Image (tube, rainbow over all chains, first blue to last red; front, top):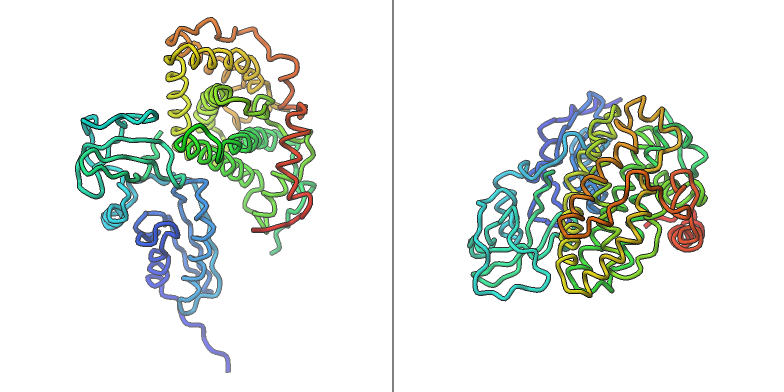
Length: 180
Length: 273
């Protein structure tokens, strides 16, 4: 007796893709980051996933690909999973949803798109290499102050830069703006 | 359906105008990234260590993306194909400009080249966003967003050293005097460039990219009182800094970058990590 393959539930596949955590920022998922461009499920149980990398050179993309394949394979009826990264449309930070922005903040990373126009830091010795106020000022993820400055355009990963809060005296990271 | 497995470059046609354009794009980034990595652990400050480590990572990955565009979607093992292109070619098959392969020398030399190169890269990527090839245009758009940070960093140090004391300004000036003429090698035409431009793959010739770059560079040099260093429109790169686009490279590449960069791949073909 041959068993009829179970029809693959598309919503289950979409949920499986969206819930894959970012390997570098586990509280945030690829769904929250807005990295999912398209999910297609064929009648034969073949799933095609198209993702938008946040950074073209993000070393996490290979891990994300592997995790997406594993997550979708676990959905009943799925026989094959193909993941493709594409650059059109380019991923931009406004694709991060409200939950993702809040999770990033809780993680100590200022999301893009917050209030701008922070005044220059006052009463703090300027570090010799400080770049000064940034064109995309971010409120401090710890105390909410807008008296922050950018110390460096480069941080621990390609997608983050380094900031300092003049009020709570904490260094913090910010997700890069990624605009021309 | 079986896709070709690319484990050596013999399986890829590297002679056409599209391939030659993509090799120039990828190789400039690959060699620039390799040289930037020199500063990891020994840059003059922690911030600069992070900066050049990130720049190195970005440039190597941009090379990776251009190699993927060259391979296309129909390749069975993309990672093996990218490795074969990056590390499996003989030195005379690399198409980067010679200025990219020069050693880092001191930090001012590195910053001067960084500024010349990233000012060029920004102009080239902007032009490529109008490429007739959809994949090239999409990647160029994505990379302009990322390269913005390299450009900000390069401009910051250019202005900062120029406005520094005699020592800082003197180092920058000497470095620019050496690197600006060599940077002209970035604008030498590609193999078959007439076709690359006619097909719209590269929307404007390198001569036009050079005109745009020279204008920006001359303006910025003027602003810091170093206008006399601006390259003239008829200047050619020094003889030993030209020919990279045709695969002629100096000992800085053939005896230094290439053996080190490809050593692991040649010793262990197909190695994965």
